[in-house]
Length: 106
Image 1 (tube, helix red, strand yellow):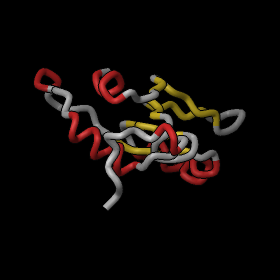
Image 2 (cartoon, rainbow, N blue to C red):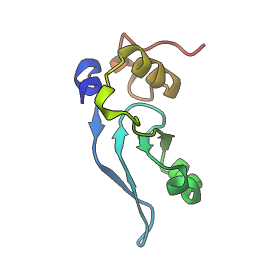
Image 3 (cartoon, helix red, strand yellow):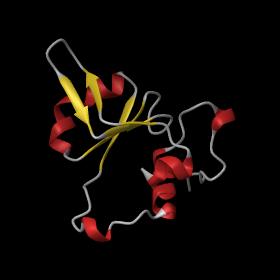
């Protein structure tokens, strides 16, 4: 993933969260150090997480619904857009490790 290499992101893909003995939520990936103390889950469909919002929050996860681009042939990495998204999610990792490129919330 271009953003992972370029921005030094700690990403686990795919990623699964065990919510109970019978429920496992699968995310496209987890971006560590952003969104929540445990990281930001990225999923494709809100209905997938809707029943588990309280459980995810209690476990320290944030989540974001990002759809895949419809035109995969013209899909390009837009560094500024990715930085905007990550800045919006907020840094939750150690302050000493906060990336220089991260923007402060407005």
